[in-house]
Amino acid sequence: MKKGKFITIDGVEGAGKSTQIAFICDYLHRKGIDVVKTREPGGTDLGEKIRSLLLGLDNEGMHSDTELLLMFSARNELIQNKIKPALAAGQWVVSDRFTDASFAYQGGGRLLNIDRISELESWVQGKFQADLTLLLDVGVDVGMARIESRKTKDRIEKEQREFFERVRSAFIDRSKLYPERIKLIDASQSIGRVQKQIQLFIEAL
Ligand code: Z5A
Image (tube, rainbow, N blue to C red; front, top):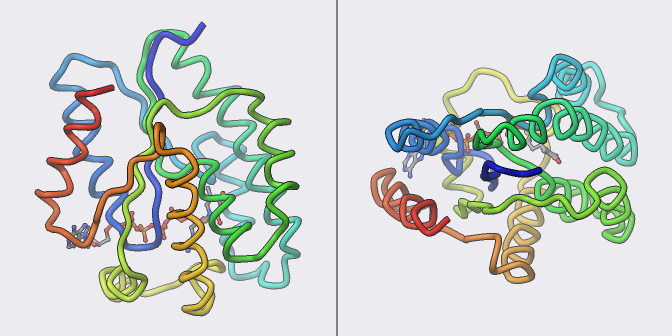
């Protein structure tokens, strides 16, 4: 069924995901590969509505379980209606964030039970996983400084520094757990150096 490749990119705020996704898509296009770019939460009409609920400041009292369930609801829409059809048609899919973010933000940040997140992962994904995950790792302070000039913070961005330290640690733990799939890249380096490493991983894929 799956003819294309599925690449995800993750990391804390300001790690450079959007910057590097633009590079990846351009690189794949130049190789003659038909690529679909998407993001989480979101990426479908319904998913983008769920994203607004998740990140909107009018939902500040949202329960952590609700947050987790909404992440996986949006993910189900994205997998079933966009990612799987594209991969079956031979396109490559590049997603700005995916399930590792739920383990990092809801598991690490919100301290939700990892087994429950794994249950949802099995339910929504079965054995479906990314072929390659690029984890851009940068210190929380460096990442925050990079996005400092943005005017507004969304509901999750308003969390305390300790929350993002836990998120970062959870991401690193996952890269140790799944070294074949998750490639940890030092994103404190220049944009060009990060690109060079990404290029090597994509070539290998
Ligand atoms: N979330 C969750 O909780 N659970 C889940 O399961 C999922 C998501 C899927 C979505 O936000 C939020 O949802 C996110 C996690 C949560 N919450 N938070 N907080 P998002 O992914 O849409 O947005 P973001 O994480 O806040 O991304 P970002 O702030 O846009 O960061 P970025 O895309 O990684 O960075 P960037 O825009 O590419 O770069 C930021 C700036 O740094 C820009 O000026 C660049 O030019 C500069 N930059 C980039 N790379 C470098 C290097 N290497 N050196 C110097 N400067 C650089």
